[in-house]
Image (cartoon, rainbow, N blue to C red):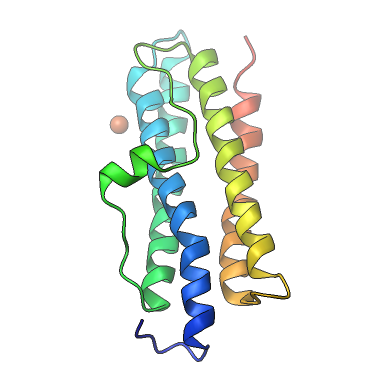
Amino acid sequence: MKHVIPIENKLATQVVNILDPILLDQLELYTHVKSAHWNLRDANFIVVHRFLDEVGGIVNESGDVIAERIRQLGAPVDAPSARFSSEDRLKLFPTGELTAHDALTGLCVSFVASIKGIREGIDATTSDAIDEPITADILTGIAEEYEKLLWMLDSHRVG
Ligand SMILES: [Fe+2]
C-alpha cells in the first residue's frame, strides 16, 4: 500500500481491514434508506419521505468519508455491489410497499446493526494493538450522527 500519511504500513493495512466491512455496511444501509423512501405508503407520506431523503444524504456522505479514508491509507476501495449485498452485516430490508411504521422499524434495525459495526471499529482503532486516533475520530463522528438519526427514526415510529 502506498500512502503519504505518516503511519507505518502495517498499521495502515490493519485500519483498512477494519474499515472495509464498515464501508460495505454503509453502502447497504443507503439502499435500505432509499427503499424506505421510495416504497413508503402512509398518511404521513410527505413528512417521512422527505425526512428519509435527508437520512439517505447523511448515510451516503458517511460512506464517502470512510471510502476516502481507505484511499488516504493507501488502499483501493473494494466495493463492487456483489460484495456489499452479500458480505454486509445488515439483515435484509423488507420489500414491497411499506407503512411509515414498518419502514421506520426496518430502518431502526438496520441502523442498530450499522452502529454496532462502527462502535466495534472505534474499539478496534483505539486498542493497544491498533492505535489510530484519526480514524477512530472519523468513526466516532459518524456514530454520533447515526445515533441521533436512530433516535429520530424511532421517534417518528409512533402510530
Ligand atoms: Fe427521492
